[in-house]
Image (tube, rainbow, N blue to C red; front, side, top):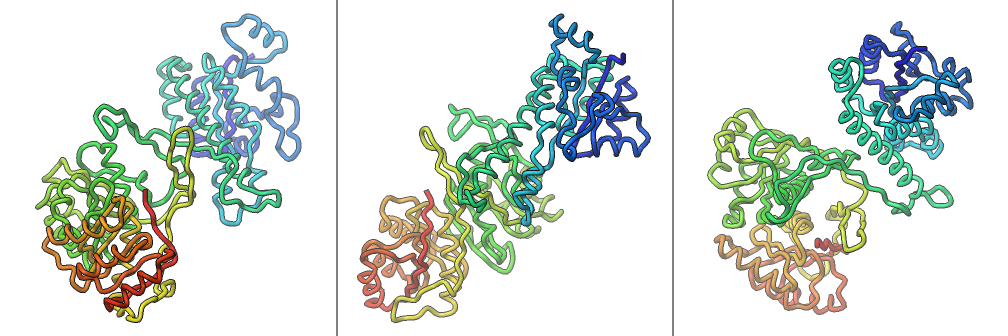
Length: 519
């Protein structure tokens, strides 16, 4: 009886033939099923099909292949229990020392727009998770590999340990295996519990399972006495911060990551070349322009003091002249879709600056999450961008075309500023920002003060308020500061009073019908 068996049954066949050849070289007899067996036979590799090994045919269109005592006893038998080994010998069942299994592509299947419930159900693996969990449970003897990226590690271990693997490696691979099946089952649960009795999609699943893998351990959290780590969602979202590639600079901190995410999500929302500068999770300057340099200079001029040590995000490639301008200030992180060789060479002069590259795509997670004591708040992301046709003009004075463009720009900017938010804008530039105040009127006053400190005029500016003005006093402050057009959601019981105040002072005001609270 051959004493070394490796069971291979994979959906992802990356690197499969090379691994199979090396296992054979190390003296393993290969057991395999279905498409895996077919592929290995096509390249003339000797294998033993599971149906031959168990002397039991595959059944039910392949639904039953590996669910057999000869398979699972060989995997689960403990080497330290004489009774287990005697049972195997009595029934002529060999030990299976290596299990290479990954599962039906359930996540990929449900990601397809035309996926039906039947498609999803057929891609729920049964035998695969059973083998993975059995092998992982018996890691003291069995090596379980679920990730093709670990094939090289397996071969290195077999070479170093005369055809075996170390206990430390088997335990590490077992950890990955249980994570693999947990993530798989979570995806199935999330998908199925998001269907109602008529198989229609609900807004939220009855059970929400989250799966994140550690991307890096951080030096500390928001403060040095707090520990922290950065986890990456296992469901990759194109264009999200977790896909960053760091070109240079120190390791990202907890606050760097949080602030960079705020800057990146904001800059992605603009269609023109844009620059966003963030400090402590709030934009302190936002601008759109013809070039990245112009956008940067306008954004920086909004609040040069707060921009010191900030995060700078662009939605276009950073060129040399822009990099040269940035180097005149202290900056923590720069993020963009790409960077020119000239710009990269210039920024390399300041090797502490963290430079990140992320492909510019506008993917979003299905849910925004916020942890609270003993629970989790879940909502859909705020990705709504309004257009001119969504606006309702409520004043006697109508906004000009230039004002309409600035109002829409201001509205997009306000969405990313902590509530209560008041944003003065003019010609595609923020000229005064008031954020995070308990009173909207205080935000309006702060925005005006910040503009004065930056030596920016608010005359003929427009203003966005992320939620309605509850009284006319906040409106009076922004108008007295120089605003000639206002965009706000409307919906207050005092809307008539606020509209009358705008008419009284001869300014234009539009309602959006939606608000953008950001807490």
